[in-house]
Length: 258
Image (cartoon, rainbow, N blue to C red; front, side):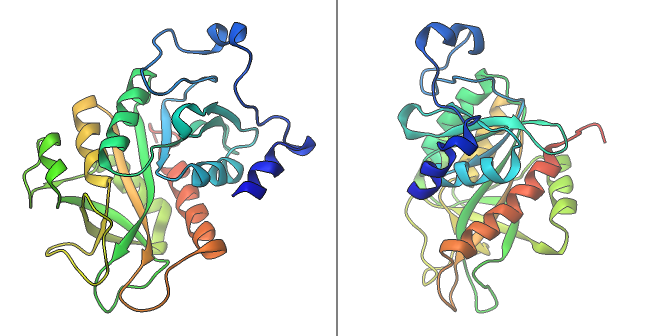
């Protein structure tokens, strides 16, 4: 990740900028600046959300033609720019866990985000699961105590925006497998499956539930980074899976009238 960061700051990536001088910020920051994110570039109405700041950098390089850093406050790296299709897109890290992700989403709502896709990792359950597969979330199951803070009782589900999920399913094609995913307050383990769920993560339910409250259309695709059988997905293999998910998310978010 640090090699990648050094690379984007080199002469070939001079368009990828960090925060400008304070005197310039008023010209580019939304008049209503949230409490946590401190954007230094415009925020698009569509966003890809990732937990890992390094993954936000990876997807910015993969999906945006001239990415610019839009946030580095609290270590939550964010980038903005245009896709190859000419669509404005923000890619924002949310940190680890549901509460952090929900707070970041609320800040993005203040900045005008209307549609978002989460790309994250999960632990897949069952002997047929394999590391590296992409799971299209069709329902997020409340599996932790924090679910109640989002109005979701344990065992209840929250579903993604139907239209955005359909678009994401089309964009993923055979690369995506529909799945119900449980969201926990602790790191999930393949050795401890959750009844009714094909996989588990730590933030999809929080994002989907908060998105409903905020009036944001949201969906999610998760990378199975661990499974019951086989080695965990790491390094280049994980980055390739993230890039595939990112391209599908960008396609699903583009041209919402189509």
